[in-house]
Image (cartoon, rainbow, N blue to C red; front, side):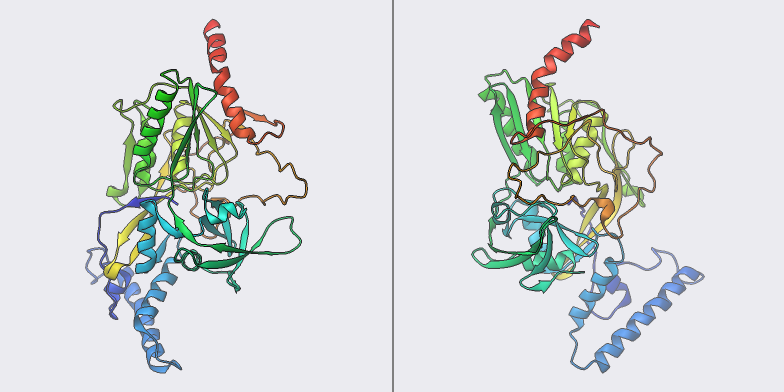
Length: 441
């Protein structure tokens, strides 16, 4: 989901040292003397070292200290929210590659719902996408191993691997009588974050699948290409954020800035002063005031919710689709010793109007549910999990009281190939008419 790339270097040691083990300075600069809280922490840590020593001495086999320490850190972070995690060197390297737009695997975004691995969304044009894996599918086994209570990092490690190698997953889909084994061949997943096309000669369509390091630059090129292809007559733009799981916060801010010439984009609130930030739009680099439609669904999370929320709050465009995932937290990436990394939830973000999206999501201006499959025998995917369904999710503490959000309208169209997109295009085509009527009043 969303990564906020921190510049700090959090030192951590692998020796049996309490301070280095936790990667913090106990007491945060305060003297231990006279601090009852710190005394309590040291007493609790003594319990850990006692257990560590007993295991090393008495366990039936010789335990590996580094693996024990990694396991202890992993367990500590698993008591927090579902997005904080320790990343061993191999996992951290894969995460860096992914944000740069390339990794090797099957191409799915997963989460953990009630201890069960669940697909948030398949990435377009990947083995999982081509095999028909759907959002909401539960992955109950990987290579025959039950995934119940398997951590996300362990699952990702098992699913990824060298291109050309195979992995078999067992999925359970709502409405199915039994599980299904699917064997996938891993490929290099060059996540192309921006796709675009000109629709009906005058209307631009841009799909953002993730927010990576080059997304804003590629997005600008896409819009310029649409302007050129329409010969300067672009009449509207559809921004498709469906099944976009998020990515880099700075890229979400830059994308939003393309549509706003002023005003607040997003505010970030953490415990420390340096984690309290506000991001504003600038007039430089802003696109023309094209009529704008934004498409979202339950797979739209984190950075994509920042974009949709800001556009909705500023009334810059119309948001269409279904309620988004509801991940309103920011993760900072801390590089650690020996190539490991720490992904830690450090702040919450709020939309320009002060709304917290955490465990709530963005409610579209117009709710449009996707068309059901034409083939009645096709199994319909279950309801997609949202942030509020995840174990240990953050509440919306700190958010100002807000009125219950209601969609402005609910549309139940027929069953076109993509009814959400079709409605968006129809809305753009009618934009001029509505504008004229409004002026007439």
